[in-house]
Length: 196
Image 1 (cartoon, rainbow, N blue to C red):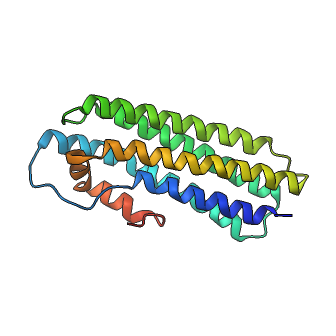
Image 2: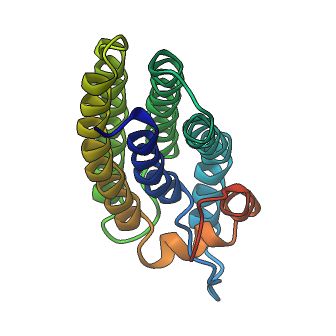
Image 3: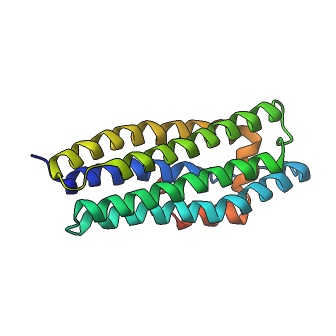
C-alpha cells in the first residue's frame, strides 16, 4: 500500500509545474521603446509579483509537509490551505490582467480576455481541489492516499493549462515588455521552481 508521503510528493511535483507558469517570463529584451506596452507590462508585473510569492509559498508548504512524517490530517490541512492560497492568487492575477486592460499589440483584447478567462478557471479549479482535500477521509490512510492520487492527477492537468494561458499572453512583444520589468524579473528569480 502506498502511504500519504509518496503521494504528497507527487502533489508537490505537480504543483511546482504550476508555480513556474506565473514566472514564465523570457529573459530577452526588446529594442523598441513602446511606452504604452511597457506601462501595461509594469502594471501586470507589479500585481503578479506578490501573487507569485504566494503561489511559491503554497508550493513550499506542500513540499515541506511531504518531507516530514506527517499525519493525513496535517497533510489535509496544509494542502487545503495551499490550494485556497493558489485559488486566491490566480484570481488576483486574473483581476490584475483585466484591470490593466488589453496590451497594446495586435489581438491584444483577445489575449487579455483569454488569459483572464483561463486564470479565473484555474482559480476555481484550485477552489475545487481544496473542497476535495477537505472531503478526504483522514482516518483511513489507504483511502486518503487514493484520494490524494486523484488530486495529484488533476493538478498535473491544471498546471499545464495555466502554463498555456500565460504563454499565449506573453507571446511576442508582450513577453519582451514584461521581461524588462524589474518586478517580473524578481518574481521569476524568487521562485525556487523557476528553471529555464
